[in-house]
Amino acid sequence: MNFTTVSFEQGDRALDWLALTDALAAGHGLPKAEIKDSFLYRGKDTVLSRAAWIDGLGIAVKTATIFPGHDPMVNGAVNLYSDTDGTLTALIDFHLVTKWKTAGDSLLAARLLARPDSRSILILGAGNQARCTRAAYSTLFPMARFTVWNRTIANARAMEDDTTRATENLPDAAHTADIIIATTMATDPILKGDWLRPGQHIDLIGAYRPDMREADDTALTRATIFVDSRDTTLDHIGELKTPLASGTITRDDIRADFYDLPQGTFKRETPDQITLFKNGGGAHLDLMTATHILDRVKAHG
Image 1 (tube, rainbow, N blue to C red):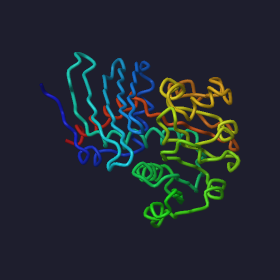
Image 2: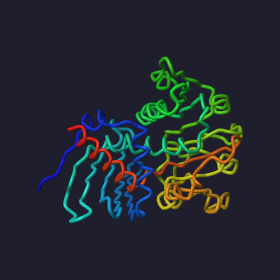
Image 3: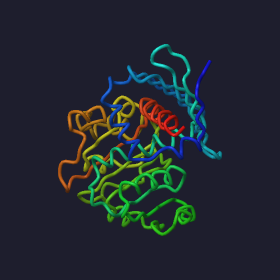
C-alpha cells in the first residue's frame, strides 16, 4: 500500500495561518460533511474518536486520547483515506493537525467576527493551545498586544515577551480587551458576562466535554453566538448544551456556523456588537486541515 507520512516538522514548516483559513473557508463550499463522534470516559480521562467524509475531498479518522495530569496531555492519530476507493492515503502527525486545525478554526472566525482595529488580546490559559493561538492571531493582528491570565500566575509569566504580559486581574483585563480567547480546562465558567463591553469578540476554545464551560450565561445572552458547526457543538459541549437545556438560550440564538459562509450570515453586523464564537473543532475540520497539510507538503517537495 502506498501512502504518505507527514511528520510535525515537515508540515509545520510548509504552512501559514492565513492560507489555512482560506482552505477551511473553501472546504465549507463543498457538500456538507457527514460526521460521527464517539466519546469514552474514565473519570477525567477521555477517548474521542472523530470521523468525517466530504464528498469530493475524502475521509479522515482522528482519535484523541486526553489524559489530564500527563505530559503531553493529548495524544492520538490522524488517518486520511481516498474518496475514490477508500484506501489509506496519508498518516499525518496528530499534534500537527491538532495545532493547525484548532487555532486555524478560531482564526477563520476572527477574520469575520473580530473588529479589524483590535489591538488588545487577552488569552485565558497558558498551555500549548494558548501559545499556538497567540501565534495564529499575531498574523491577523500584527500590531496587537497580548495579555495572559492563568490560575497559576507563574505559567502566565512564562509566556511574557516583547508583545505579551501576564496579569492577575482577570475582570479588568477582560473588560479592556478587544478580543478574549479562552483556552482552559474549566468545568465552571471563568469568564463573566458582566465584565464585557460593546465591540468585543469572544473566542471559546477549551471546553470539549458536556461538563465543561468557560463563559457564563450572562456572556452568552449579551453576545451574538456563532459556532464552527452546529452538529458538533450544540448537543455535545457544555458551553452550549447546558444553557440550551436550561432555556437560557435557544437554538435560534445560534446566528450561524461555517456552513452559512456562502450565505454571508457569518459576520459581524455592527461595531458595538459582542460576538462569541464556540470552537468545537469537528472531524470535518480535521479532514480539511489534514488535506491542506498534505497538499502543502507535496507542493514543497
